[in-house]
Structures are given as C-alpha cells and as structure tokens.
Image (cartoon, rainbow, N blue to C red):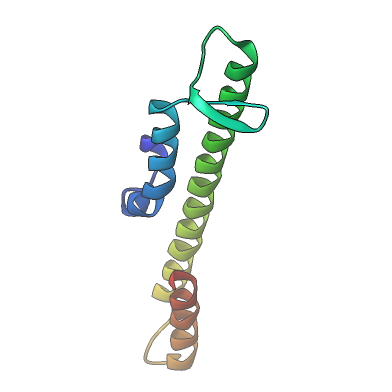
Length: 106
C-alpha cells in the first residue's frame, strides 16, 4: 500500500493508516456485538469477525488512497491546462483556472 501512495499525500493518509496498523497489531475479539480481549484464534466466529474488520479497514484505506490519487491527477491536469494559457493575453481565464485549482486544494 505504501508504494501506491503519492509521497506528498502520505501525511493525509496517516490517520487511516494508523487505525489500520492498530487493528492489525491489537486484534480485539468481538462476540455478540461486545468488544472482548484479544482474538481467540481457536474460535472461528471471532476470527471471521476480525477478518471482516481488517478487510473493511483495508478497503477504507484503499478507497481513500484512490480518491486522493484521483484529486491529485485532476489538479495536475488543471495545472497543465494553466500552463498552456497565455497570461498576458488571457489574464482573466488564467485567474479563473487558478481559482478552480485553489478551490480543489482547499
């Protein structure tokens, strides 16, 4: 997963990555909707519930990474478009496009 993250976006992923890491390092059992101690590996129901939690958290982390990558690519395209606008001839258009980029980044 770390290799699929854009370096400048890693700080934005830190919280979700820490949650995922915590789930992996501290497996909590969940039986009947109640959180218990660590997962009992001899109990198939606990294992199944734990695996579902890990898969859900991994899916959430992957989805956030994909969303950030998409936004990054969109901003990159907008910057390329901005570079193709003659600032002296089309100052208003250039400013409008810069405003769009700022809006996305904010």
